[in-house]
Length: 331
Image (cartoon, rainbow, N blue to C red):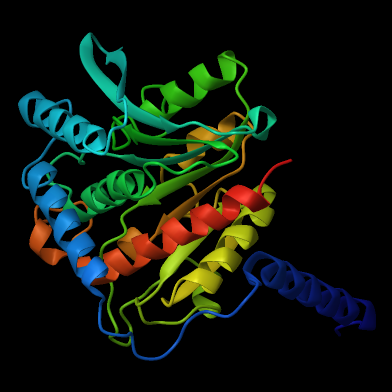
């Protein structure tokens, strides 16, 4: 016979789980809903520019197993980063005797104690895939944000970094470009106020059932893949909430956010993981990758699969979001 204490314990457990899920998923502001407006001339131009970047770097596999294509992508990216007048810094390292490099530009900050904010994306592709969405889309977004913010006078120093070697077999190892970068920054005694990883950002769908999630998030979020997601760990809940609040003010584009345990599948699947390891707040901005994109890590991840106009809307929203966050984050 079931006892009363058992039922009390069960109710308490259910309430605790519900409270935790609310704490993880409750986000400030309101996501944009309804029909998207026709793209502006600036958004159409931005979409065309990003399509050009993705075609240039992600029409063929590019990683340490394909060094010629990898080097061609790096050289191309150095050129587009430098075009607005930025000084591009190569950050070389070796993996098994094979050379590669991260790429970095910095917009100096006016307040020395404000620290550094990093916007980054990996520019390698997984083995067997050209990597148009993963992560040509995040790479294109990063270089365009660096162009759009050229000449800015922020409080923080803002760095735009393209990381090598995010994909397997280097994923979650010391050979990830972001792990090399974060470790060196820690050794130099730098203070990273925030890190934003732009990961797999170019695929959107209005179709019912086009969006999936790991349990228990599948119980809470919509089933249409028409939004951009802001994803952090439990310790980074404040950063996730600050960021999505600013995005919802400045962007007319659907958004959702979560601050969840890092062990939940997908939560740590990008370069923000490397910055968590060093104790810095970081989050991923993404279209949710394999939970939405049917061509993830396949030969079909080609430039024609991306929705560049919606990607442009996201990037324009992120530009305004980052400008707002510069005043709100840190001391």
